[in-house]
Amino acid sequence: MWPYAVAVLLALLLLRRWHRERQTVPRLSEKHVLITGCDSGFGKRLARVPGSLQLPLIPSTSGRRELRPFGVRVSIIEPGGFQTGMTDPAPLVEGFLRLWERLPAETQAAYGRHYLDKYAKSTTLLHRLSSSRLSHVTDAMTHALLSRCPRSRYAAGWDACLIFLPLSYCPSWLSDTIIGFFLPVPASGTP
Image (cartoon, rainbow, N blue to C red; front, side, top):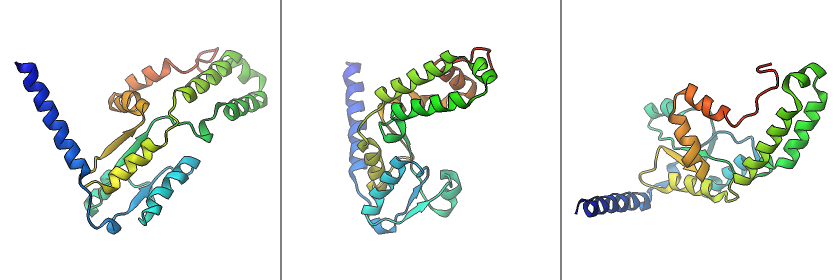
């Protein structure tokens, strides 16, 4: 009997959340959009979305806590990996090789050729695991702008929800250790 009660309570909770998120905000013209990290091609494309809604854009590095005393509510969108021109592995690996060839011989020996090869393989794997649907980020931005009760944090993409967001709540030493398992190690330890 209790599993049914838990299922009904969970369904009611999800229904309440869905209902709150579907309510739109009046006076949309009074909202502003703070954009950080627009130096990438994806950030510039993302900045066009609120611009098309006739919302003022303010490039800023100010955080959520600094703006709260002024009555500004900031929603943070934390995207995972997406397939864009910046993450295309072919030009990245070419750039790695060009930099590798310009390094002094002692630095190349300290890192070892396997370091470069493993880094190139991990870049290709990361690109394959990345999502090609940029709409996850634009949907999060639209929800943050148009919802009456926007969330303070949005995780866009499966890897952001399952990997990066939980890692952000871990202590630094633990997240560094977990990420360190996937990064290549130099041949002579730490150079």
